[in-house]
Length: 148
Image (cartoon, rainbow, N blue to C red; front, side, top):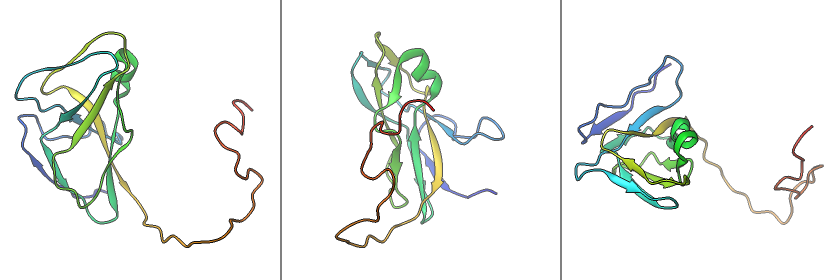
């Protein structure tokens, strides 16, 4: 099943496409007409893509890291996943951060992140004085252990 999404590509890069038959994400490329950007260790920068999309109601686009950049260079998306709402029409920006130990150069056209389209539900929140009890309760952050 395919979902049709309108896209305006204001970059000089090719329009994103799925790189394999069962890929979940579309590669996002840096749009840097002013030239390369250097990310020093610990530094973060907003990288433009030149892409604008119109998502249907009930869908979001998630900006996620590329595993190769994370593994090889420590480069990741800071607010993972970044959410693009259905009513946003601006440039898709990617907040990259360098968790590596060496400076990293981002060039125009580099594949810097992935875009995953996902259906979502809208919730109706009902205020209550208490929640139903569960075995886990309020225990969090590792309370279920680290192995079986």
